[in-house]
Image (tube, rainbow, N blue to C red; front, top):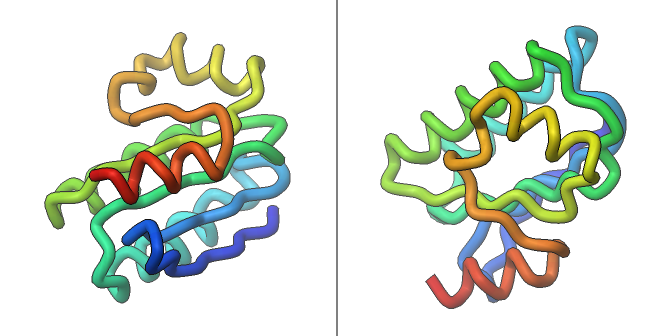
Length: 116
């Protein structure tokens, strides 16, 4: 799993682009990197770009819950962008959907984050 993290000052957001499977093999590293970025960033809006994520396991779900908790503890909001239908179904079944704001694309999520 590749993780790209950047501050998008124009949107006042922290952008995390994930590529691959968020599963038992990768969840610890992903969580460690994203939580460290949240803690280091002044931005409270977090956009998770899931367009290239094909699979999320229960370990990945746990990671997302922990990321949301960490960002919310700072008064932040989390957007999911570009979630594939099969991954969205996992979020629905697991009850995660209400934890996030959702956008069709990364650009839409960043625009919504900029709007507040």
